[in-house]
View: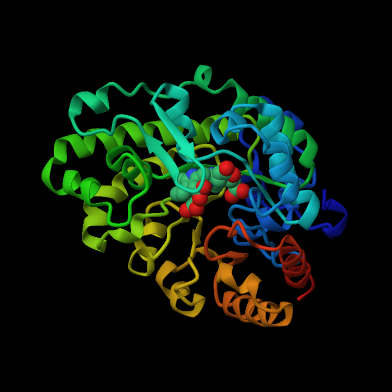
Length: 369
Ligand code: CP3
């Protein structure tokens, strides 16, 4: 969509890295895609402008989203390829952001394999029978293409519509998804989850392997259908000490990221409250490390080392006057210059009461800075 803005750039060997080989998607890939600012930045190159997209850019902050979702449940809408396509495109049309993120949810693959769960408005994912035993883990089927035909279809439709704008596929990381499965719903302390991790390592290991396999398959399906980057959301990993993360969680996220790496797409790894974990989250196999707004980029960049950073404007700054918001955005962009590369984003998802006009102003500001 934005290929006209991108000046021609000499191809490098790195550019082939965005083409997932051996899939029908590579045949339909837009020629401008590999030079899109988002993919250039994600590979550590020099983009024509700082790329920007927003976590949760689709969703309740957009009146056009509320309109198409009327009377349709969250999970139901995630399983309708045409609706997914429309909702994913809405923020790209409105803001002219540099990437689309596939509209789905981290628990969708669990729903697709038959786990009895729902997403309750204002609450989040709720699981009917929380996972507590090895038998509970073994009862969860592995994810295959046949479980999610609507995902492949939506991705193919999106890639055709998006042209030179990349589509980011995503999955929930094993720890964050495990938290919903074990707690049975959203949780502040993740106490039952961590109790399993500390007290029943065999059950924990089996559960983490199960979820890692599902996440890896979910990412593969999205990339094979045409997604050009992936983000692994470990939103609640910040609840862990570095030692526990390294011993009980990181190997499983590593497996998911390694499997995505075989598909030769840039991998973004994001969590909330992860100052202590940023180094490990990079080492787990990320090309880009997402940083939440609590950690200044100046502090985050040395921790992630030779990796691209993504982030990290405080999502509540959209409620400040536009000039206050953009002044803070300028500080984020300036701080990002010390990194190998920088993709501008909020430090967590768009808050539903956000005025979309502020995100339009923010996108324009980042592009013009
Ligand atoms: O970023 C995007 O635009 C893509 C869509 C997306 C959704 N969920 C849609 C959604 C993504 C990337 C997610 C991931 C997700 N889901 C995460 C990781 C990202 C993060 O925010 O840390 C987590 C932890 C979840 C679990 C979940 N699903 C929560 C906490 C909620 C919110 C509950 C609520 O109502 O406040 C959901 C539901 C959900 N997922 C909504 C959307 C747009 C809201 C449901 C609705 O619109 O009715």
